[in-house]
Amino acid sequence: MAEDRSPEPAADVCVVGAGPAGAIVAARLAEAGHDVVVLDAGPRFDLDDRTAQLDAHLRPGGEASGTPRGGGDAAGSLWGMGGPRDAYTSSGSKEYPLNAARVKGIGGSTLHWQGMVMRLHERDFELQSRHGVGVDWPIDYADLRPYYAEAERELGVAGAADNPFAPPREEPHPLPAFPPSHSDSIFAEACEALELPMHSVPNARNSEPYDDASACVGYGTCKPVCPSGAKYTAERHVARAEAAGARVIDRAPVQLLDHDASGERIEAAVYATPDGEEHRQAARAVVLACGGVENVRLLLLSASDAHPDGLANSSGLVGRYFVDHCFAGVGGRVDRPTRQNHVGFNTSECHALYDGEDPLQGVKLEFLNYAGPSPVIEALNADDWGDSLLDTLRESYGTHLAVGALVEQFPREENRITLDPSTTDDHGNPVPDVRWSVGPETRQAIERVNEVQRAILAELDAEVDWVVGPDETGPAFHHMGTTRMGTDPAESVVAPDCRAHDCDNLWIAGSSVFPTGGAMNPTLTIAALSCRLATRLDRWL
Image 1 (cartoon, rainbow, N blue to C red):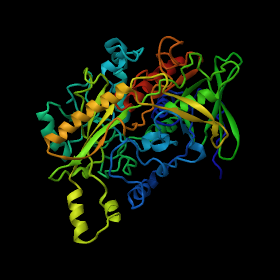
Image 2 (cartoon, rainbow, N blue to C red):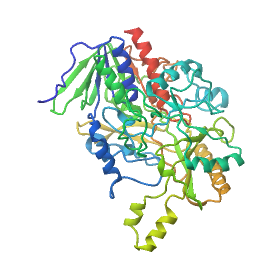
Image 3 (spheres, helix red, strand yellow):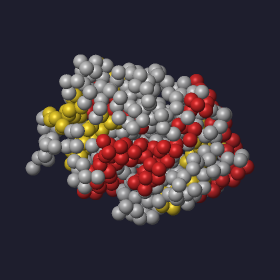
Image 4 (cartoon, rainbow, N blue to C red):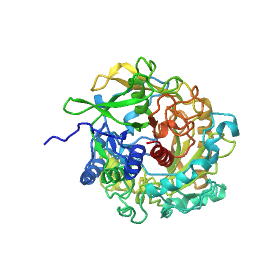
């Protein structure tokens, strides 16, 4: 029997996108008693298939890799990405591999993310005021602080109050932090000598059972798949939304948002279904929550006589100021076992370089639980076998160390998302074009970070065998800034409450509203803003 994907006859809210932003908004509004419909372009993924996905990832010839460079991972075939549905172009000075780490489907990119969740620092909200670069947010850390606490409860964050550089907090994390890994203890020797304090990493995975999910059991494959369910995915909030009466429609890509005659109110989201039908989902309010790229694409596809340059784009800024985090790293080998393969996520980091003047950009050092190249892959590619191969594997595997970093990009108007009419998707719509470049100030910051990373490995007498510097840097796939918030409609796309300046009943959720990106992984801030948006929209309805 075919699944019913017809529109809901009477909806208070239509949420476009079932990643963390859309799922949190949907759950909280449904639990507040509102009629909610969620539309997502991708499918539902069966939880029972996670072990098979893990097998596909780990088998020889699969997507497992022992190299942490460049920021990408194995999102592609494991989560059904690719083909005409997900086509894109990249016309910037640096190629942007958009499909390397995004997922379309119920849960979004939390299905394969690593799960690190930290708050932005106070300086991130006041970059222009403090340093004369970028812009200030129209809200400050104090405004978002109570919502950060809500977000940590919503995601089930394991953490500790051991970070001397972190912004102030009001209560402990919901779950205790994961203990430092064995390789963290090795790094601690060098960091103490270099006066680089290490501290725990807040993680959205269960250090003990939480929210009806088990504690982490140590598969070590969090990115790209967690078979145990201990790592948070937005599927949890989708389930909560449905339990509260929301309707979630998968494989329902929205084609455009249709507005009334005045152009000031959205009347319906027009979406397609696998059977070739097209429907209109009417609602009193629409929440656009499909990421920093697809949010832009949908607004531009919704151009009309009233909005000739795209919906909510009177400022001309929809798609502009696209920022990401750049990866920098140094890896090598030491003459002792490092045992990183026992942990599949980061357990320690350092924010000592974050708020300084050298470099000016935010930098977050990450101590990677990295075991080196896969011994299976090395064996399959080896020229020799027997004792010679065994000696090679003993020497090369489990003796590796790597220090990574996320480096802030300042917003630049020329970095942007546009439409490319020369290439169309499976519905005949222009695909997104990503124009991304790494500016000179970011290159300098990466060079400085590499110096610090080299110093750490030198302190351990490590033999450096790879470096990711400014020429090799890749994105962390944190799509931010393309529908920035602000108080001036001429200089921003949404107001401080995340409602579009140009459309009375259109709200935008997610990292696309960030005016600046800092160097902290964005998901906790996405969740905090989503909690805040849901509170305000609840009052508005």
